Image (cartoon, rainbow, N blue to C red; front, side):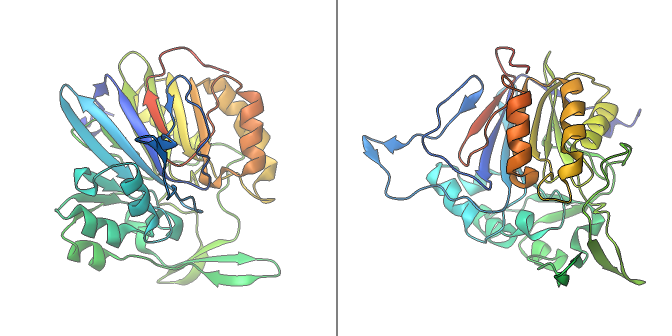
Length: 325
């Protein structure tokens, strides 16, 4: 723990903009720490809308003095969605300083190649070494199905990016953002994605999705915000590891995919909610693969802290008024 890589700088403020998620509602209202996109511009409702899909992409802005660092976590599923939504939100791709890929599934890597072209300058791309493994999913009545691979090491490097494959934690964006690297699995109930398999040199083997990682921001006087992609390692495991890496117990926000969707994950929803209640964040924003049933559970159990995720929403941290539910 004395390695300087883990010395995450505290920042006075941060913003997380939801560029891609499974849900969009243009009629939502602002609330403390939550800024919804405008329905109209210059007195007119737009003829185009933000797009939602089964994917995730989050833009994370951190400030150190007058210097803003802009980190992108994941790129959504379909090749054009994130670019379209960035245009709608007046976010310039070339303003991105670094890209982090939370893991190697298609709904988080779909726009990598197009986005790097749009950025148009060399940037660092951070991921776990297993991100490029060929993945499969085996389910009863369906059998074995293959995940699409939407980018590769070679394609990323050809785009001019500097590829950093790290299994451990690493600081980026002026040491204002920490990528956790591989997350230890310690809770008794978070057991990963049933039926996941990967191709290795030994053949087809169970896939624990070891490349799953989250991002961590430290807010002055408010603790840390944990931002997950899918939390295949478990969102509780992810938060616990973020606390361990930063030596910060207070968690002001838990944001991202919690991977609690579907009948396979239903048995752990209650345990997950109870553990997050013990953590008592000021803001809870379940997204993407959390699933409707789990999202409504979080809404009922965190009446003040819960935020409904919707594409185009900007989350401002720290939350100015206590919203702990």
